[in-house]
Length: 134
Image 1 (cartoon, rainbow, N blue to C red):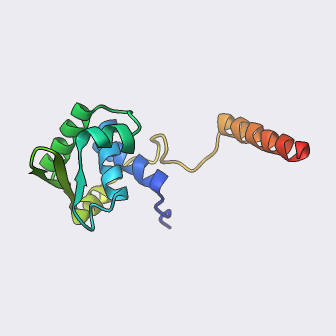
Image 2 (image 1 turned 120 degrees about the horizontal axis):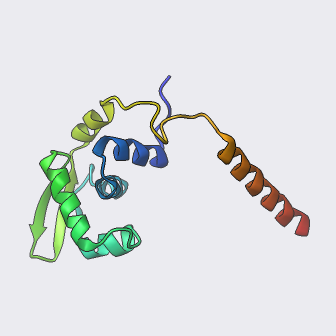
């Protein structure tokens, strides 16, 4: 049975298929902004600073957009040198997500391991301490 696609899962899937962090960030953000439904008007500086919290810079945003366009995943138009108009090809992204990826890659397995158990135990203990203090 296929796992339900969540925003987190989609990012991991895109990251493994595209192989480039910035490209996965941009495509995920464009999908979140519903650029597969209607054209998304975005200034690359705003995308870098606000949508992606400065994780990549404006030039990286632009380069990633161009790579995604070369792959046929997005279409780009420039509006009066102030904004980029982005449309995601939903069918092309769906096709990309159909490409097989090894279940051995990080984020692709559902199995817990010792670090995750320790993290979860620590988080549960912290939550319990907050409840006890209330």
